[in-house]
Image (cartoon, rainbow, N blue to C red):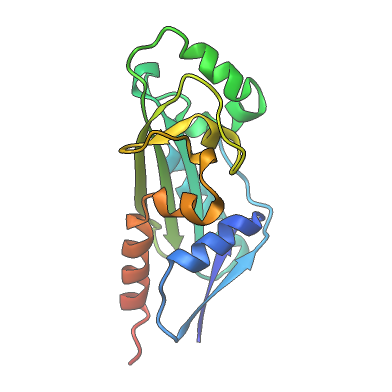
Length: 189
């Protein structure tokens, strides 16, 4: 049995990964709550790669680490890798203030899944959920930017959908590609 650590303290992130990753029977995904250093970098991918490398070094075993960010083209890609910091400082109200007179409200959530193994360079898989920023805070489900992010093709914010429906709106293509890669890497012999 191959064991792969999904490194996060967030129970919801791990549950979501369990639902979206479809591994063969010879692979077991486990949550590891390792205190992981999260660097400040100019790209979400750099953060995920650094975090998975650190995790692999600390645990000496295969690991998956994800990182995500909200990217708004009209703000030059901001907040991007600084999404968590923005959430803690100016919050969603502050972000809406930055967008006050902005006509181009397109946005996307980018999630990077980084997979690493001892002695190997990590590889990444990307999920992109496209949409736009609403003009007001709406909804009671989800958290943070869910209250101002409207997925492409919808008229309601993510926070206006209950958990089971909201999860279906996120792009899962990176999870599928990661599953396929890991299944091939650890194919039963």
